Length: 115
Length: 115
Image (spheres, each protein chain N blue to C red):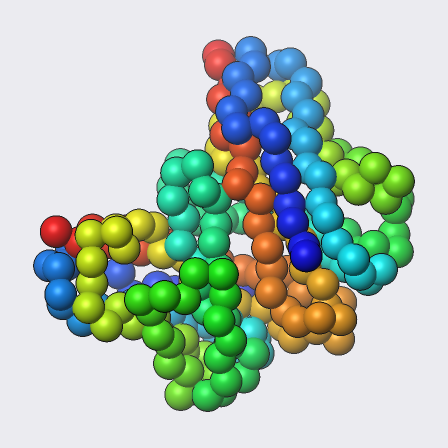
């Protein structure tokens, strides 16, 4: 079974802190994604990566950066956390296009509260 | 631009009733994938089905069935004889593999199955 693991289930941080959300997948997927989920807004794509050291902005990248130094690991970084970044963060991974199995598999989510 | 619309924000039905969740999509590509995911109260998104744009055959899996109609750009999901365990948020999603590997989600439909 595909396993996508996020380092924390719940996180509370202070405004202005630098926050790292870590995600690891064990299926050798090329693609990895970070989404945030807010009530009434569904899942919105923050960043995705299709290879090591490669990244592309999603729909809401402002205030975030990412790092992918190894294929299995994709980190989301909040350089200076703000209260409007309080949300549920979901990591996902998938095979690259060109394969028939393009669905994404998700981690359990990290509920981040910025106070 | 790609877009997924789930017009039903919230639905409540009594157990054993049938229920259909609507999904309408927009894309300019002839090659695309559609997905449905389930998010139970635990929070982790669970992949349910993938359908590619060249396969309009409807699919049935137990009490779940999916109706894909390119003529109306819809990919609707029906649960037959609903059960309390079906209570969850359901997301429809779209990807365009000739463009990139992004997966764009609708805002979700929260389904309540009442005992």
